[in-house]
Length: 82
Image 1 (tube, rainbow, N blue to C red):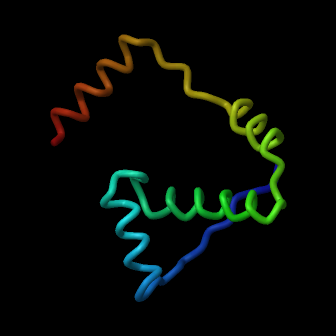
Image 2 (image 1 turned 45 degrees about the vertical axis):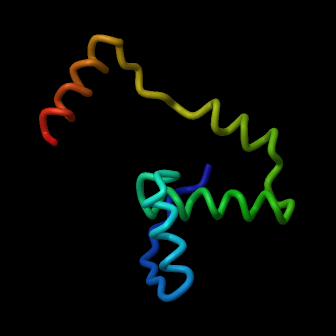
């Protein structure tokens, strides 16, 4: 597995508006999430990504082990912050 890559991007015009629309529509929570999804989609469209291999990577990713009780506490804490 490769290490992460950090980027600083500046969007203007149509691209900036589209990115804002993706966030405002609720499809993505953050601009970074939208850009990552777009990159994966583009790689898939070009045939650079094998869907089965991609799904295997997604499902094999380490997950946070949270009990239902802890999840409830975390959600309540977030609700209290807003």
